[in-house]
Image (spheres, rainbow, N blue to C red):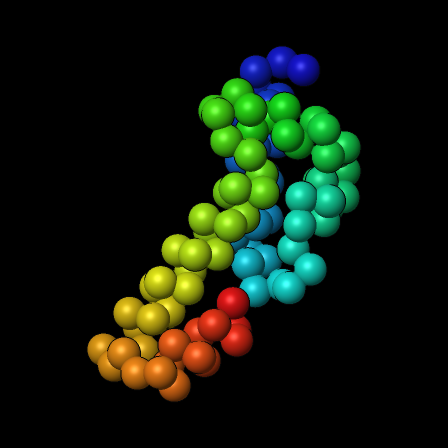
Length: 88
């Protein structure tokens, strides 16, 4: 697989992941299926930047949850934490 192709797969995967963060079934398998590539090919595309697709999904979800907590009108209560946790 050529470097440019890996870069395109990685870019498309990251875009897909960001758009589907709230999907509870989001997984490496779901991403690879949506892009029409094998799981192994997707993993190789991420290996080039010393990352894994599953790690990117986890970190993106954590970032999304952290941002949601900040956006809960500046309030940090148990209720808002629970709401964000249930939505993530």
